[in-house]
Length: 218
DNA sequence: CTCCTGTCGT
DNA sequence: ACGACCGGAG
Figure 1: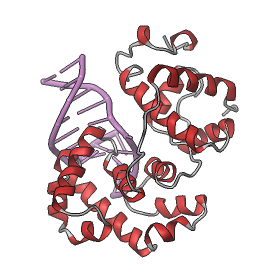
Figure 2: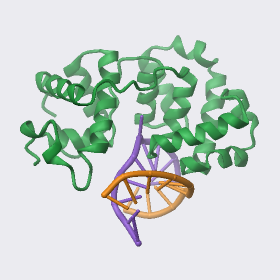
Figure 3: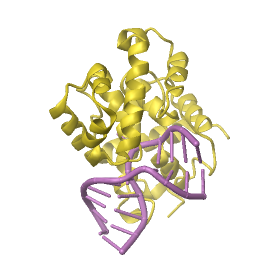
Figure 4: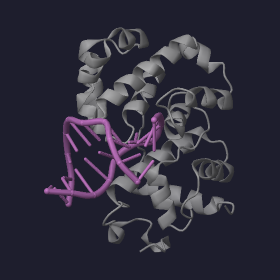
């Protein structure tokens, strides 16, 4: 991939921030809650995740020990509004086992970012995007999160070409933008907001889009 | 590529 | 009645 244009990426960021304002993603929750939220929100609307977490919260404290003590089918029942509840019940418990084995937050925090990333990716149910969500929003590591919205928005803008693999895109953004945690945090949140509301897969609302003037896709 | 699944907006 | 949802595994 040709090097991403840093000025272009910053211009897009400024425009999105001016349009939507700060998104305040995951500011108040504990790192552990951010991590389980990252698993539950896989291909799932966040509103449904909040319902699932609320039901779980009513039943047990949100700790790895309590989540592991709950029988898998009862955990799945709490997670029903989330969708994929049987899968996510298993993924959540697999994550909690690994989390405790690693010595919890205190143990994980000592790892370098690359080592922590590889540790996360070895857990069943954690792929590149979920791992990077955790690295950025729970551990505040300078990792740019790439998701389906990122691909769609920047392909339409002519910044990305199709069929680029995850790592290529992630490194492209990180190289262009520098290691800036607050920027990565806000940028990803803005991309999600924009992809959801305006730059939708079908029938994108191009006439209302704040990036319309600089977008060759419409 | 297919499966996993409830909930929302259109 | 759909399609889409802050994806990942087989």
